[in-house]
Length: 146
Image (cartoon, rainbow, N blue to C red; front, side, top):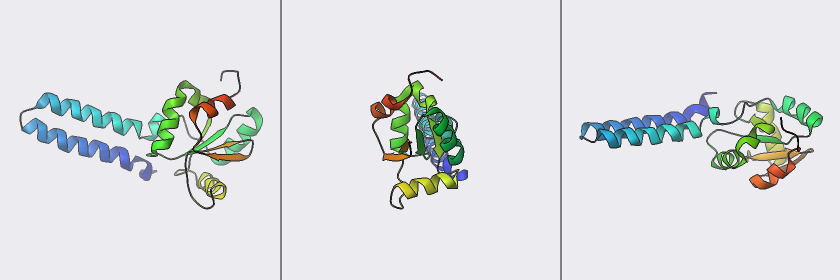
C-alpha cells in the first residue's frame, strides 16, 4: 500500500521544499503556484485519480458476466495515467486492478507478459493486450452505460 503513495508524497515533498525556498526569497505568488502544480501532479499520480480497484479474481468473474475489459495498472505509471485521462468518463466502465495491491493481479500480468509486470495490460475475453490505445479500449466497451 505504501509503495503506491511514494511518488505522490515525493511530488508534495519536493514541491514544498521548492515553494518554501521561493517563499523565503520573496516570491510568495510563484511559491504558491509552484506548490499547486506539484500537488496536482501528486494527485494525478495517486491511486485516488483512478476508478476503484478490485481484486483480479473479482474482476475476472465480473468481466465474464458483463463482458467489460479488465485493466491491470499500477500507480505512477505514465502509460496507465495516459490511458485513464484519455478514456475520461468511460474509464469507470472498465474493471481496474492495481497490481501493487493485488498479488493475483501481478501474477496475471506476469503470466501474460513473459514474466514482466508491463502495464497497462488490458484483458478482453481472456486475451491480454499490452498498452493498447485508448480509442481501441473505448471501442470494446458495451454500448449501454453503467
